[in-house]
Amino acid sequence: MLTTMDKLLRVAYREKFAVGAFNIANSEFVRAVIRTAERADSPAILQIHPNEIDLMGDDFAAYCVQAAQRASVPIVIHLDHGRDIDDVVRAIRNGFTSVMIDGSHLPYEKNVELTKEAVKIAHAQRVSVEGELGTIGNTGTSSEGGAEEILYTDPDQAKDFVDHTNVDTLAIAIGTSHGFYPKSMKPKLQIDRLSQIYEKVNIPLVLHGGSDNSEEDIRGSTKYGVGKINLSSEMKRAFFSELRNTLNNNPNGYEPDALFPSSTQAAMTVIAYKMQLFGSAGKASLYQVTAL
Ligand SMILES: [Zn+2]
Picture (cartoon, helix red, strand yellow):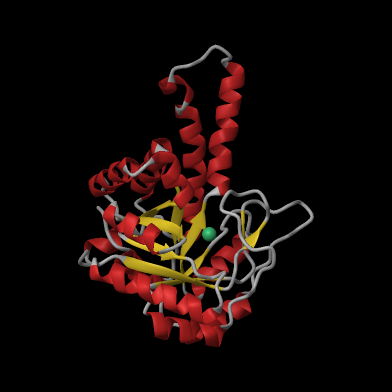
């Protein structure tokens, strides 16, 4: 069933688990996420970045909406890193139930202004909004990019931002980066900073760059209000590594139904593991009693 981020994360926040937001760039990933969620009895978020909608076109969104409506578990369709109001409006027109407006690279007041405008437009359509304060790092391995230097989210500023913008969820910077980390760099999340943000801000928090972090950090984050964790690189790497093997082993192969199933299975293995780690597996039934 298709639902909004606001409704999805209200339960996650209360029960202290996080829902995975998986970046989908084609129908194989859509099926991988929904099938795994149904098997694990887990809610899930289908997340589409502007680069991905540019690749697939607006009709892809219609496919995602229908797939979400037919799913037996709660599914949100979310715009990842909306750059401006045009991205937000395009996503709403395409049936997304949640949008992110990313003004984190702007001066603070400009970020507030842009986010407020997005909230006004989205809430009029009952669509949820994720804002971002602080910057997510860039390991140089993801097309999402990121900032050269991580600016950590300030807890007092986070409260001010939420009060002034009325966002439903807030992406925070506590030490994660997009993509994979180089071997020399071990990511360590600032759980202390997270707990201070959690004390001051009463909405679900979002962790970007969920690949490659320690299990301990991930479990720790869900105790302090993280209700959504973005996952892209690990799932895509599993899919394309397997596809590379399949193509190498079948140099003359060309039928999609012969080439894709093992790659989809490899992605599903990562997704299932993350649903367990984030604590969302087995939680879809909690939504039966919550009015969607
Ligand atoms: Zn991100």
